[in-house]
Length: 301
Image (cartoon, rainbow, N blue to C red; front, side, top):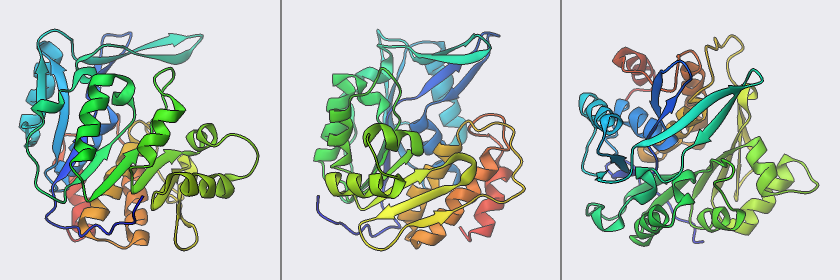
């Protein structure tokens, strides 16, 4: 695809994809979904994204819309499904290990392309891959891509059995920046070779500008079509409560850096810093503004 330069500040950010609840055996329900987490974080960083998703006309759907309202998020991209329930992931313990059932045919599987609001030219589009498991939401995403976003950030989330390699490669070919983890890189580029050769093969095949690989506790590394790899590592004394949402936090700052026009090195350092802060939370996000204010002050936002 053509190499494009994103001009940054003032552009509308559109976040497309699932919003759901993780439901645990003890009855607890945790709000999340990678696109929702990214949109939540961007709102806290004063980007004011438009989240395009769909919820059911049910208790969980009302909770999502209520949480967005309290956080000051724009509801214009949210759709309400009269028939399908709000998305859920049923979490169970099997042999002491958690297993996850991403329940099919939920409201976010039926995002309606005709109901997406009009958008200004030159918007930035963020999306994942899970919502593309259904043809309805896939068509809605394709309609957004057809509107000609100035920049596309693709967050790869390979959740079996809800992905196909050909479909993921098509989405890669429309993206400017891509984030995935090390395991996902190996699944998309099987065979011999190390991380750098796999990344080079994927960049050559798909034509994106940058490929960001998260490495868990070892940080992250970015490969680009121009210049050598750029690597960041977390601070040596990072307190870990849980790792839920760390990847979404990293991606949030990739988008923020693109909007603000930060240099790549600055963006990666701040993305790693934010991910390291999020692993100190219980869950992927927080409703505590001071958590974000500390970072905003350090970043001169």
